[in-house]
Every structure is written in C-alpha cells, then in structure tokens.
Length: 468
Image (cartoon, rainbow, N blue to C red; front, side):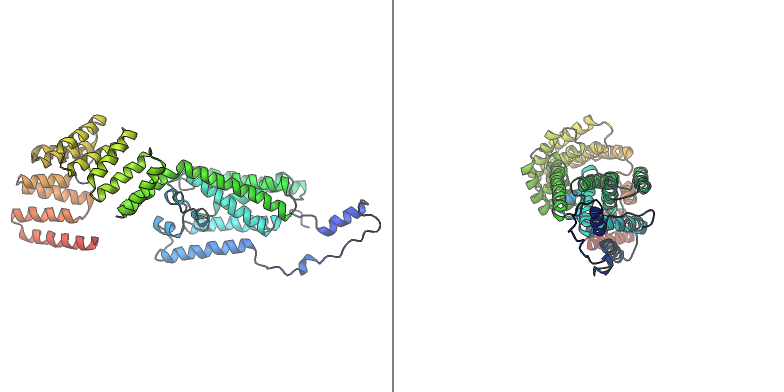
C-alpha cells in the first residue's frame, strides 16, 4: 500500500493472523473468498451522484434566472433555500434541499472541490450507506443550527454536510477507527483540523458566510464519527443502524426544540410576507392559529392587526394593535399604526392621543409628527398640518408620504405652486405612483397648465393598469 493511504485489514489477513497466533486450531481451514477486484459493484460512487445532483440543480437555477449566475433570493427560495420563516412554519423539507443549492459559481466550485476530496475518502472508509447517513444528517444539523442562530438569514450550500464529513473523519481517526500508521494519522488529522479552522476563520471574517451552519455540521459530524468509532467500529449493519437511529432521534428532538424556540416569531414573519403579497385572508388564518398556541406573542398580534387593517376591518385592527402595545409598550410602529387606524375609524381625538404618546416616547420621531399632521389635515387645519409634515420631512428627508400630504394641504389652501413642488419632491423620493400623478394633475389643472395636467392624468391611468 502507498505510504499515505487509509486501509482496513482485509478478511484474508484477519484469518491469517488468527492462524499465526494459533487461535483457529489445527483442523481449521482458511476459506476461499472472492477477490475484491472481481466483485461486480457499480463504479459510480455516491459522492459522484451527490456531485452531479448539485451541478444539475445549479444549472436549473441558472436557467430559471434568465439565464444568469446572479441568483436572487426569490430564485433560491423557490428552489428550497433554508429560511427560518418558511422552514420553521412547516417547510421542514428545506433542511435537506438547501444542501443542493448554491449562491453562485464560486460558491459551488469551492464546495464541490471539497466534496470530491472528502466525500471519496469518507465513502471508501465508511462504506456507501454509512457515508450517506453522515452526509445527510450532518447537513440537516447544519441547517438546524442556521435557523436557530440566524433565522432570518437565507442559507444555501453543501458546506454544512462537508464540515460534517470532516468532523466525522477527525473523530474516527483520533479514536482509532481506521488502521493507520502514526505518521499518516498525524498528517491527516493536521490537514483536517487546518481545513476546519481556516474555513471557520474565513467564515467569521466574511459576513455572507453562514458559520452557524458550518459549526452545526462540524459538531454533529464529530459526535457521529465518535459514536461510530466507539460502538460500531466494524461495518456491522445492526450496530451502525443503531448509532444512526440514536443520532437521528437526537436531531428530531433538536428540531422540535428549535421550532419551539423560534417557531412562533418565524410563523408570524411568514404571515407578514403573506400580507405584503396582498393575501391578508391567508395571513389572518395563519396568525389566528399562532395566537391560539402562543397568546402572548406580540409579533403575531401586530401582524394580525396589519392584516385586519389591509382588509379595512378597523375595529379588529385597533384591538390587535392595543394588545400588541399591552405586550410591548415601547413598540413605536404599533403605536403609530394604532393612530392611523383610529383616524380611519373617524376618531381624530383618539388618534391625536396615540400620536402625542408616540412623540412623548420619542421626541425625534418623524412618524409622530406625520401622524399629528394627518389629524390636523383631517380637521381642515391645513397650515398647522403643513408645519407638522415639514417637521417629519426635516427629521427624515426620505420619509415616504410627507411631501404628498404636504402637497395635498397646499392644494386645499389654493397654493398651487407649492403643491406642485411638494408633489414633485415626493415623486423624487418615492418614485411614480398613481395617487401622486392624480394630485399633480389636479394642481396643474388648477394652475391652468392643461397639457401637463393631461400628461399626469394619462400617466396615472398607465400606472393603475400596470398595478392591476
């Protein structure tokens, strides 16, 4: 055998050594066994199959992207990326599919290079099915660590499973699972430890690298490799299956723990996504189920309030915003939303109280001044309203809506030049919007600028059609 190679003692040598030690008896006959090179096994290793699966998925992602090598989060999400709000709200299959996705050409090139080397080595030492179990289970463990530590970070890549293979090899070699010379053992361990240490260091230095996934894969690999070395050192199917079963049970329990810890807020986040996708009915059903399980989850009450608001069920929205503030009195966003809800219920005095409380909570809050401006405009007090809108814009120059409301107030005061300037400033900040073009059209028409008014009206109609 070459100097730096792993090997197990073959059955012939085991039998021969027993005979040399006199353990077989004089009448024992060493059996004749088929030479391994004549066994008709498939030449396609599992590592090559996994490698090919990763490459095929990558090609599919390129095609789905336009084609493009710059994948958006939307594409990676559709293909099954690991993302807390989705994974922990029922899409548990993402803990497997994320292992076959990559964010770009450099990402997959590095991971496949590592897989080709570590995978072939692990498969030759552990055997195909033990190797498959290590790869999948450590990959799942890395995915669980990712959603536990970074639940709002979208994670893809085979690196969690690759770190799992490295961890299993480190534990097995250290505990003497494989027959190695001392020099070979030290050299291989040093290489593996350097690989893990250097990769984790780089992962800590680069913000886009999901080191939680790497650490989860590595730790689970160390545990699995150690258990195999201690309790199933030979390729005994029953013992190996027992070890794999114990680790699989531990993974399931860990998953339940992560789901219990992070699941509520993540399901609420997924419901928020449904609201942003203009699907409040689905969001309400999801959030009501979450609140039934976790009645004190403030994020769920806030999301439910927004879903009710989107459906214009203002009394229900008011009740949920108030419940949110009971649970989190310093939640400025919910206090502002409560004030807007009260305005929609034609209760300006109650809305004023909510915005005044927000201003007392944070004297530099642009939301509070904007809200007070809305109350004053609702009462027909347009000049004081303009002053409040100016304060909001001064505190946050890019504040969406401040210049639009300012333009509307100027129009009511027949100050058409100021109204047009305010609308144009809002357009600069927020982009083209149908309501903004309608406001401009009215101001242009009042000013006698007929052509500009017609252009703005036509653009408003175009934007509305595009939205539909």
